Structure formats: structure tokens, C-alpha cells
Image (cartoon, rainbow, N blue to C red):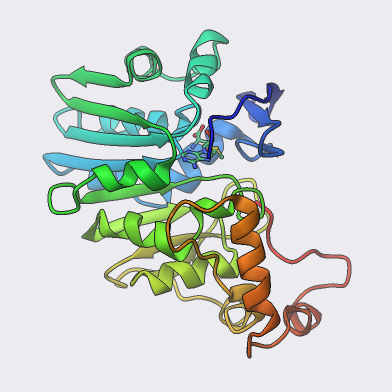
Length: 298
Ligand SMILES: C[S@@+](CC[C@H](N)C(=O)[O-])C[C@H]1O[C@@H](n2cnc3c(N)ncnc32)[C@H](O)[C@@H]1O
């Protein structure tokens, strides 16, 4: 994946915070119902980060750092509930223009001054060091950079998993990439994403994770919380469980972690065509009113 060059277009969201639209991926960076709200509700609240931050130390992995909003919501929470907590944070991000634009255009102005200063350091220098924080951004394709995190030494308590949607960015939703990410999740840790796509949930299960739904702020569909240890996960509804038995649940695959988005999409289409799973149209007829679309692009 080469570095994107398309425009990043500024867009207000319903809670007053700003997001961007990526011309390269054809998608907004956040829910347009509220970008800051999404960072808090879908990522920080769903993982109960405020409780986890009561510990003396917290390790975070932010997959697709983007404008840094999820990181900002997490740091803001830690500083509020337990400033003595030592935070180790790694962010993965393809496009250095994104966090820099967030800083240059004043999009991070809604966070506290100390959090803003951390985001500035991360955007400009790729790292932020404080007595309580050691944070690094690994620029480039997350599929390659994740290999530099040694799971023996890096076990995240919380992983924010926030790529563009599977149809627009299939390379970050494959079984193989999610396996790499899951290897960096502490046995008692929590991985959270806004997506409830059946292909994503199957990939998480294939990576050895148990899954449960969470309410995803500003979205019609739930998100997903994934853990090695299933304790505490909400059960999937009948509708969600049946979705995993349809062809929508055929996961994306990328054996070398280097295929193009097109190649990954086409491989999945071929696997769906010969799959024994029931057509998703049957599930849709049973569960969704006729005008409603299958979940979810994002
Ligand atoms: C939905 S946005 C993330 C929003 C972000 N979490 C935030 O709070 O602002 C997706 C991000 O994934 C990045 N991205 C796309 N492909 C990538 C790849 N192969 N490796 C790493 N990052 C990638 C994009 O540049 C974009 O910043």
C-alpha cells in the first residue's frame, strides 16, 4: 500500500467536532453523528478504560491512529481518573498527513491542553514522552509495521481497531492481519471496533478471540468487543449469530500480508462463490425490513 496522496476534506460532525473525508478510500474518518463522541463512546467507554486506568500501568495499541481522536479520548480519560497511571501507547498509521492536518487545522482543540500537546508531539515527531507516557507512532502500512511489535514484550490491555470499512480497506480486516493484532492483545485485554461485519467477526474468531456486541455511538449497527477470555462479553443476538452462518461471514484473506485491496476483495468473492454457507439474502429477508441495507459499510 503506497502512501495516499488524495485530498483530505474537512467535514463537521453533529457534536461540533470535525472529521475528514478521504478521497483515496472514499470514506469519512468518523461517524458523522459525532467524531469526538464516537472516540469516547465506542472506544473508551466500551472498553471500560476508566476502570482499567486504575491500574499502575496501561498498554494501548491504536490501530489506525488517524487524527488521534481515539488516543486523545483514552489519554484524557487516564489523566482524569488516575494521573499516576503510566501509559505505553503505540499507534499504527499509514498517512502522516492525517495527524498533522488535525493539528495544523485546529481539529484537536476540543481536548485538554496536555492531551493536545501529546497529539502535537505525536504528529510532528512520531513520539510523545512524559513522566507518565511513552507513546510512539509507527508510520506506514500497519500490515508490515505490526511485525515490529514483539508479542513477547508488547501485550496491550486495550486495542482500538479503527480502519476504514471492510469494503473500502479490506487489507486491514483479513484473518492474517487480525491474527497479528490479536497476538499483541493481553490474555485479559480488550479489542474494540465499530464494525459488526460478519466477515470481521469470523476473522476475529479465527484469530482465537471471543466476540460480543457493543453499542457503537452514532451508528445504526452495534460494534464488536473481542477478548481472549470471553468473561464479561455480552452475548450475540440470534440475528447476529445467524449472520455468521451466511456467506457474508466468509472472511477476507491476505496470506502474505502484502496483497492489494482488489486482490483481497476478489479472493473473497471467489471463496464466497463456492461456499457451503447459506446466501446472505435469506438472512436479510428474515431479519431486515425490505428497505434496510445489510450491515454495514461502516
Ligand atoms: C477511520 S480512519 C481512523 C480514525 C482514527 N482512529 C481517529 O480517531 O481519527 C482510518 C485510518 O487508517 C489509515 N490507514 C489506511 N490504510 C492503512 C494501512 N494499510 N496501514 C495503516 N493505516 C492505514 C488511514 O490513513 C486513516 O488514518
